[in-house]
Image (cartoon, rainbow, N blue to C red; front, side, top):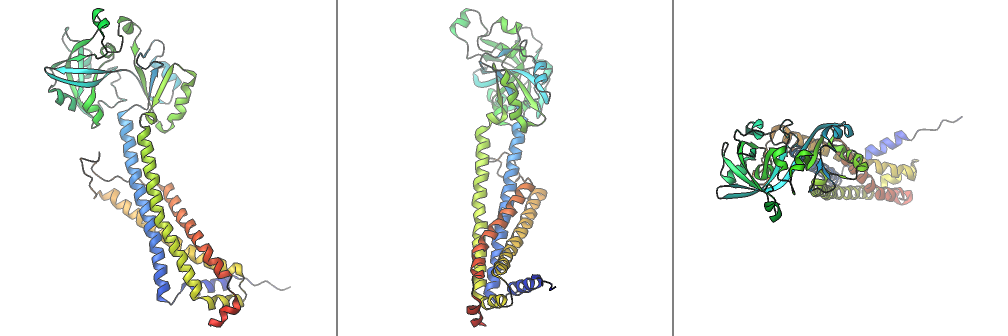
Length: 424
């Protein structure tokens, strides 16, 4: 019985001979092919990490400034009664909720002397503290209990203002201002409805969120209810609110939570994804576009690999013919050149990944890149490490290198041994 000889030693010798190119032109081409893949992969790693950092930071600010879900009545302007849909009932529907708070929300005009400013008036439960909106998660001065009792029977209550809004009105803690309801009509005035109220400023908050600090004013739930459209005493008796705000431990699963309200058609949920739909779409589109553009660098590098292998095939025709003559099949020759192309792509992808990670690590730990304060909402360039994306980038570079090597490998496999031996 004759033992079949393994082709592996012959294949390995042929591979070592072809990659140990003596020609300087081929050496330079191979080096530039590796360099092209390295630059493309490194650029993709750094750009996607930085964009991931921006996206994560922006999402954190979204979650800090807004509840994950706000539930309104079928008619958002009218609201609904807490006697019908209480805070406890919402907690039973959403046991994963980390916070549930009722609120009122209305557009009003604030007046102090001759200064007028439009604002969004929030009514909150002072016992719960409005934590879901982050009014008081930043720096603030004043006492929340002052919203319920401002110390004067002639006052409608106490009020907290964003610091920028207080500057616009030229007021400080302890001063009074008037809130005017733009919803008031002639019939409201004739019927003795609530069209304005005098409030005392009991605190100022600063959240570093422009829409909060510039436009938001906060009062107690009872005081805020008086500025709802078509207010009358029955709204106090039935504990009417504009809606109920809910935050979750896992906000990324907001779509699942939203589906639970399908059995309550009279309730309309608005999630953080709905509120920031345009911004989230813009971020995804920008990330996809940048990735596609930078992937072209890897594609160009793949063409460079193809050119390098083609030149190797041209210069090594005699060696290919010799390998065929000593027993290598066409399939073996194709595999040989495929392995050379994949080696070039793998080295480039590995070096690119290492270079990209080192760059991201330097940006993350040393924070040496400053951002213009007037343009961006943070002072340093953010970075987020994305292991899954890095695997996809390396695999993409590897696959492009594989496809780029197919045609030259086929050309090499078709070389006629008799013709090639003439060049020896």
